[in-house]
Structures are given as C-alpha cells and as structure tokens.
Amino acid sequence: MRHALVLTGALMVLASAGCEDTSTNSISDINAIVFPEKGVSYNRTIQPLLNIGCATSGCHDVKTKSGNLDLSDYLGFRQRFYDVVIKGDTINSRLIWSLEGRLNAVPMPPQKPLNANQIRGFKQWILEGATDTIP
Image (tube, rainbow, N blue to C red):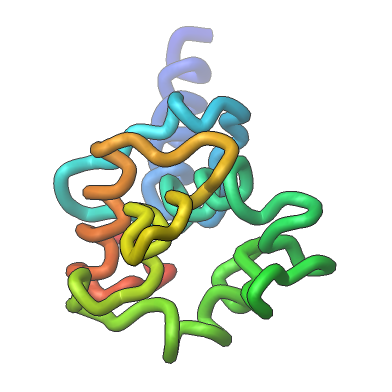
C-alpha cells in the first residue's frame, strides 16, 4: 500500500513537471494581482488584470472594442501592438501613457486605476518583449 502511494505521488510530480501553464488566473479583485519584479507572465498577470479592468462590457471587450482595441486575449491585443506597445520602450508605448494617465487623460482603467506595482509590472513586461510566452 505504501509503495502504491509513493508511486502515485511520484507520477503526479513527474506529470506536472512537464506541463506548460496555459491557464489564466481566476482572480476577481484587481488589487489581488501582484506583479513579480522580473519574468512577467502574460497568462499569469497581464491577461487576468485586463480581464478584470479592461476587457469588460462597454470597454475593450471583443464586442465593444473601445478605440478599436480588443483586450480580451493576446491575439486581440497583438492586432493593435503597432500603436499601443513598442517592445522594449516604456516611454513611447501608448499603453503606459494610458495606464499612467499621461497627456491629461484619465488613467486607465477609469473605474479603478492601477497601483504602482501593476504599472511597473506592465513596464517590465514591455521591457521583456511583451510576449505571451511564459518566462
């Protein structure tokens, strides 16, 4: 019996070690999303935050596409990279301008602007190449 438990545990560890994390986070409170210092994952931090604060009905969801920008998934985001994100350049990326409320704009998302950690996290993601790969 003991050997069966040990074998089952070992198989579970081996099976999970080779899995790629393609799931998104199911957090519903935007304040609960904390970005790491480095290795910002689109799937773990960027998309869950966009799902809560941006890709909502009447804003940047697949139907509304406010400003012709769909933030409901990476593909929609990627279609507008050319004028929203400049990989490696946080100063000229319009996404950062929007998040920080530059040029007298209301900081996005308007109902609950992002905190300093989240804005820094988006900047780090841009500096790391703004990809959807898992670091």
